Amino acid sequence: MTRQRSHSYRQPGVVLTDHHFSVPLDHARPGGEHIELYAREVVATGKDPERLPWLLYLEGGPGFGARRFTGRQAWLERALADHRVLLLDQRGTGRSTPLNRQTLPLRGTPAQQAEHLAHFRADSIVRDAETIRRTLTGGAPWTVLGQSFGGFCATHYLSTAPEGLTAALITGGLPSLDATATEVYEAAYPRVERKNLAHYARYPMDVERARRIAAHLAEQPAELPGGYRLTAEAFQSLGLLLGTGDGSHQLHYLLEDAFVTTASGPALCDAFLEAALSHLSFAAHPLYALLHETIYAQDPAAPTGWAAERVRAAHPRFDAAKTLEGAEPLLFTGETIHPWHFTADPALAPLRDTAELLAARTGWQPLYDPARLAVNEVPVAAAVYHDDMYVDTAHSLRTARSIRGLRTWVTDEYEHDGVRAGGPHVLDRLLTLLEE
Image (cartoon, rainbow, N blue to C red; front, side, top):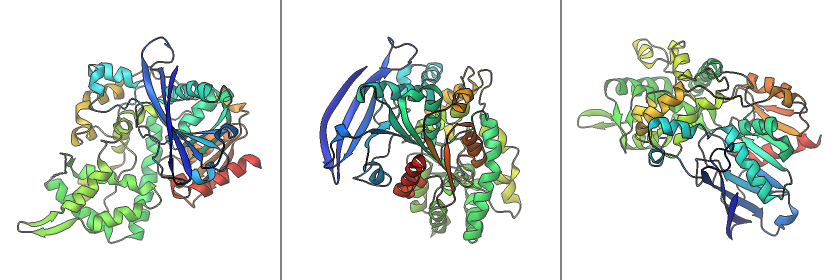
């Protein structure tokens, strides 16, 4: 592996250093094609980095680069007290050989693109981390902090390379060790319905507002800036907000200003359409849509087969057309990816055939080793959020019982984004758990 280290620079309270690494695309073929990874080192001002242990942060997703902090925001304030932090842009995201509608065609046909994307799951991310660790730390183990999908990666880390870890901290990201994509969504839809009903209980005026917007879009889909086609189904996917700490409030404010009066009658206003686009577009994170169901794929013989779309058919209350025929509240959907995403979103439309091939792909390998986790010796602490909309709480607690020595903090103080909303408190709670 080659490594390039650039000069360091400063923000309030921190010293930052950019790192670039060259790693194999396929770690099973180290002599083959290499890709570039990027990571940002963060050290508190006045601290000697050489005297601090490393903490690797793995962002949620899939498909998101590490958060761009300013100074000691969120959980960094606590982490920098006694760690040297590495914010890794996972392969294909951020500055780590990013993949999108512009770059994926360089790989060739949709079939070649799908084959390439098979190397961007948790298994490859952890192999990247291990390659980087041996270079940065001189072989010493480090602590990993995994948020959401980053926690899935941390669980894979514990399954395959626990010798690389001093400890593992997981926030909202304990995956089921064996649930299929279908089973994940069968558990998810009732949970998302509860979030909808809680939203409408808080904001009863939104029942009529949401129905009015959906009815308008059912008759006349809107074209958002850049060409995104806003249909009633696409509008429903704004329910992704309902799993975050302030998401219900954000959704309410979005709905209350949707219409304006024009010379032709009521119309969806430009401000609403612009705000909706900011939540709906996958331009900044296309891998989230392309790879989302693959993070649950572990049976070599079984494709994911658009699991969220198939399971949705068994939950007619999420059918906008049927809802509008009656008087029920419109239910927003949650963390689900559907075939229509790849026609509605210009950032995804050129990748529609690639997405279809990934949905039909077989040969996925297991990501977790229950036998090895059962004899785990790495200290692990996990925050599990009560009724988490994104990651099933029952699945997480079952996994927690399957990993030897894992300590859990189950809380309803935060939603899925707790490590962002209450970062210092959440991280401090987990670090305290490791010491108890």
